[in-house]
Structures are given as C-alpha cells and as structure tokens.
Image 1 (cartoon, rainbow, N blue to C red):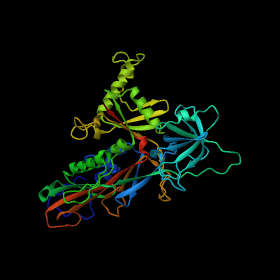
Image 2 (image 1 turned 180 degrees about the vertical axis):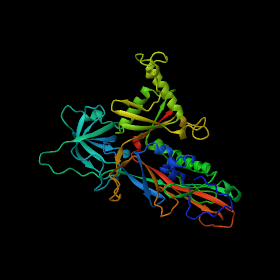
Image 3 (image 1 turned 60 degrees about the vertical axis):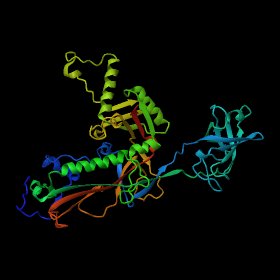
Length: 465
C-alpha cells in the first residue's frame, strides 16, 4: 500500500494514474486506506452551500445567461406632466424603460392600468399610452372619481405605482407585455499552477493501489502546489472584478471571471454594522432583502471574527434574559453546559444559517489585517430560482440554484476531475511517456472557471463600518 519507489528500483507501469487528491478524497477509499493523504480544498466556500449550488458546462470562454426580470417592478418616476383637459399626460422617466419605444414595443403600464401617486391615496386610470418616443413613454391618466386631485400629487420627480387594472364589461384584450429578461455576460478565468521535481527527488514518490484496483502516484511537495492552485481558484470566484481590455506583458488579452462580491457590490445589497452584529442589524438586513422580493431562507458565509462576535451577542442575550444561562459549574453540571456554537438565527418567517468560511480568516491571505473579509457576512439565498433562458436545452431544469459553478465542456481525458480542472505531466520522467529529454517530472494544473449568479439583487453583503 505505501511502497516507496526509489530511482531505478522498478519501472512504473503506464497504468498508474496521476494522483488526483480531490477525486480521491471524495472516494470511500480515502477513509479505508490512505488517511495520511491530506485534504485539498476545492472551492470550500461553495461546497459549504452543498445542495444550494450546482454546476454548468459551457462551450465558449465568454458566455451569457438570462435572468428573470422584476415582473413586480411597477413603479415609475414622473419626468413631465402636461394637463390635457380633465386628464394629465404623464411622461415616464427614461430610467424606468426596459424596452425601446416605437410601434409594437411595450413598457410596464398598459391601457386600463390603475395608478397610485405619492400620497398613497390619490389614484388614477390610464386611458391611453403613447410609445412613439424611445425612453419617454407617455400615459394619459384620468381621475377615478371627483375627490381625486391628480394635479396636486403628480409632481415631477415623484414616484407613482401601477398597482392593478380595471376593464370594461365585454371589453377587448389588453395590450400585451413583453417579458423582461436581463441578459448577463460573464467570462471564464484561466488559473494555472505547476509542480516541478528533479530526478533525485523522485525517491519521495509514493505509489499505492486502492482496493478497487486503481493505481495512483503521489509526490512530496505537490500538496502545497495544489492548495495554492485551489486557493487561487476560490479567491478568483469570490473577489475578482471583471476585466476590461486587460492584457499581459506581450499584449495578449487576459480576462477574469466576475466574482461574487463584486457582483453584490454592483447589483446586490450592501449594508454596514457597527462594533458587533446584533438583532437590530439583522432587522436591517431583513428589511433590505424584503424590499427585493427575496427568499426567506439564507446561508450566511463569514470569517472567524464574525463568529466570535455572534457568540458575544448570544452571551449578552442570555445575560439579559431570565437567568437561564449560568457560568457556574456547580449549578447544573454537565446538563447545563453552554454550547456557544452559533449555527442559525430565526425570526418570524426568516431563517439564517451561519457557515464559517476559513478562507475569510487566514491571516496570510484574505484574513490579513486591514482587509475587510474577516469582518464580513455574505447572504446567499438558499432556494431555487426560475430558469427563464429562452435558449436553454430541453433537458435543463426549470428551476436552478442561485449559484452555479461554470466550467468548460472538456473532451474525454483520464486526468479531468469533475470538469473543474485539468492535470497533466511533462518531462523525461513523466507518466506514462516522456515529453522531452529534461530529467524532471512536472505536474501541471489548469482550470477555466466562472461563477453564475441569478437574481443578484437578492444577495447581500454586511461589512464592519
């Protein structure tokens, strides 16, 4: 099982495969035979949301997907008001148009729509709509009854909401609305690492066979290389913004994936807390999420510093209660032991499940002093969302997790693991055949990855102020 192969001892059979630590660790053979092989992190923060994320394969390095529109987004800002007898011609602000104007194009309001103005009581009826001018559609609004004073409430810059519609008996069908989808484009990022060993170092090569008959090779030193490789993949999908016209020293284009935190910065919810997150802090998060028709169940990823502050909140909460918590070992003994293992927080219909992400805590990486990550909480919706992609294949699910790891459609190859990365060897000592005359064995790691986030307005980030 742990036979060390020294130089010149015996030829290694080509049937030996390059050891893939991620694949092996997930295999039952790990617990049976080779527990000495250390665990390799593979997108650890994303695996923490197991069952709440999935994988997608794409064929191009720049790919697009469609996100379901905000069909409940029925508010508009008034850009102009012109009296028209007992009616008012109200121009909608350009920012409220999801389509261009012109014949056959639609914006949210339709004829017969009812609208409420800024006081929450004054209401009107949309008699007609004019879409002739792009991004400046005009609705002609009547009073619902004599007590309504639209002129006093329909002020430029104020908000109105199209909340329902009223139709005549035996009326004709209303104007159609074009479903609103946002097309989101992301790019695949290439991450590479390699491990190089000289011929005299091959004495540290380990070969072993699992009970299923699979032969593996393992090299001293490849462990650190693989961990660095995986760390670079993880951080790329977490914090890297999408590049724009980026090139390397030779002028070749370099593209990066659009990481989760930058996507939240631009499209999600960003809040701050002071000193320590407490009950009122989560109230603010719930209000912000509820304003975006969010899920009621969330996964909360965070670093160790946040966990310690949540523990302090729990202690203070117990101290201010009815005396149910005691720090005396003589009061109740083991039966009254305190478990400060803060895993979830539930209030009303809301549930938050806390997961510690070590990647936010390591002092030599993202947890370094001065960086914000060890004081950060990331709120990820835990349900599924509709897949409205008009180009999706017939076997694609109608509902998908909010997070998906995106990787290429690789060809058939024995050294591909789960579509996430590719490994191969070069050098005169490479397995199974040499590629050049240099007496070395180089293990290469290559990954092309990206992250798909749907309904990004339902994600939130909470940081220390």
